[in-house]
Image (cartoon, rainbow, N blue to C red; front, side, top):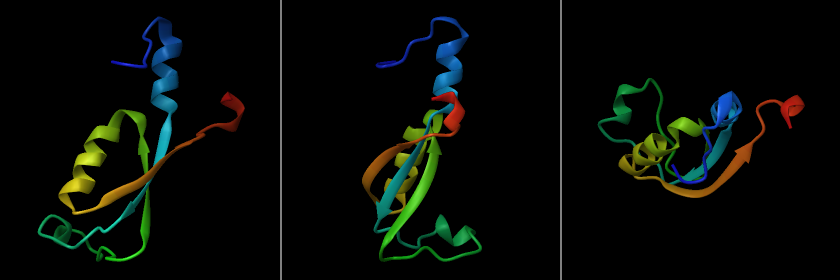
Length: 82
């Protein structure tokens, strides 16, 4: 995959520890979100924390829910690891 290295164990652990925060607007209630025990807000931003290996799946889910990703920011999981 573009931008990844898989040489040794270091490449795998660094990818596994990467976490990103999506800022999403426009989520709406639909049949899929009706299964939740809470309502989805229609206005304002929602922040969703996503591990690197689930980024694509989460983007697809947000799109299905009618949301728009405004920004994606990397988060540091472990400050000692930097």
